[in-house]
Length: 515
Image (cartoon, rainbow, N blue to C red; front, top):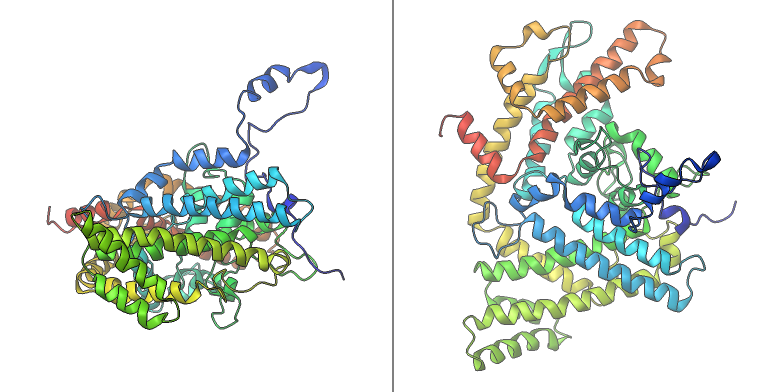
């Protein structure tokens, strides 16, 4: 058995869920396709450039403008949102791609990697940067934590009738992976749902993006039953997709060649490592800059932290002091903020060089699926990255102002889950007459698009080969009942995740009678 190695010819697959109309067609008999081909040739964009433009023009992407990065419901235009963060990640990701591509070709590391591949990975990483947070719910990562906590508390608490009319807990009706998806709710997995299903433009295939781009977004190519935070392999840290997207996941990894068909193991797409690094660079440095701007982090505290954590590199804190002195001499309004902003740009350059060097150094291991860590591991930037992350966490994320807003967010999200989950339990079942009047009112608030997606994929599952092969009628009905309940619960988490911070707060106030 030869050693497994991923190839760029498959990793850069332009295939998608639905065949794209802009694909170049061959001539049919008598040249009937000539006029169509002539029209298509006017569009000089690659499939990956088309991905980029589809994302930019999507409502899901625009809604990131009103989603929390660090500071919820922030009115200061200079503080980052999910949208500005995503644009920054896109920029860093493209820079990393260009530098990595240059080094691969310069050093002759891969004979099948040339300028066409260089352009492709730049476009893919620019797009993935825009898209990487599109599945995150309102109020930042705390929103994810709140959803997970709600299911931990309620899967054994809420009861309903099963397919046989027997009263059972939700955990007993849903199968283990369905429960696992809810208990481990993950913005990364939700991003795949948004991009591939929930963004309804033409049909139920979402944005219909290339498989190369979708696979780059899958940071953790394991399901909720195979999460293993202690494995030492970064790919099993969280779940990367829901059971509802299992078929799509399998098509993606098979088509792009990240599936080892001999062993059945699935590896990370190589570009995922670069996307993750771009995200780390963007949010780590932005959190420090925004923290100083909002007065959560003091200038002296940043200098002192660098001195203590990285004493062997005096230049890190000396540059900060020098930049502040320069700003004072120029009589700038805020010398400390100027110094930090200038310093952050320099640090970003250091981070980029480290990531590019790490990717090139570990190129063979990455391409055969053996590399199991992030690209900062064992680099000169590893300690600096951790130092800045810890400082931001201790002084910004753990501050009283943020904690108070998180308590508010917890109350709002719990309200929606309490009421919307109860409203969908018996909807689209033979027990609909047991729905309360208020349940129907909550149900009517849910997005029509999301309800359509639920109905479409419910039908797909009910008519699937998996179901048709079950001969026992009772077992067949039980599986359909369970899966449809799972999809209805996802309908609620889809709706909540798609809200912006302001919309969620306003709708909550309206529903409880404050406004």
